[in-house]
Image 1 (cartoon, helix red, strand yellow):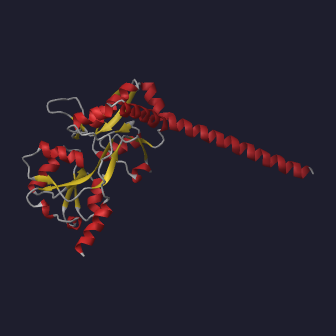
Image 2: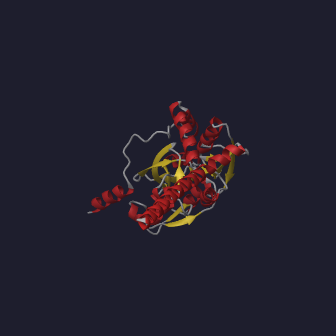
Length: 294
């Protein structure tokens, strides 16, 4: 009987300790989750990674040292409503994401696409921009691209780890990687033949064509695919920061601030709303082309 009682007490002790351990772990996890937001509150400042070279998302107007752009102004407004100062740190895309991971910045905003792969490592805010994917080519010969199969062996300008560069690679193109350079460098390289194409966001490419109308470039008329959504990106465990940012974004959507900012930077277009037309996936485009070739 005493042995049974001893065993019972031992099991009870294990269960109690396990429960305490679970509670302690939960508390530690919660503390970790709140660490980013706690540091922001203590400093009264949010630090944001961005490029400063991607018009109209994040850029410096000619002759100005004041960074602006759609993403930049969205973040400025979020910081203002949260009663925070904001500091922008510029870098290329790879270093931007690394800075989020190592804590050098609290979040990053730079027309960053929402992808399943990044969701494994980062948390996203609610999207504040919607678009789809297009392709800039040379105007006079469409860079010799009549189907997506023709991308094999072509040179695509882009940053090495972006989703757009991965699409180009998957289609057989060679990615010519750039650092944190301005839009015009990418565009002029297509014009002069150093590269053949740029796969990127429709709205950004449309504005680029307007800004550099003297170049021999155009958006390929036959290719638009893969709806995209763009958002701010932050550490995976920054749950309270995400909650605060999402709350303000919801308010900005409801009171028309996102629509207003979009109009200012995208020629009157409201990128804060999803496109009205149905946009096929890249797989659907490939399938259709294969059927047409039969």
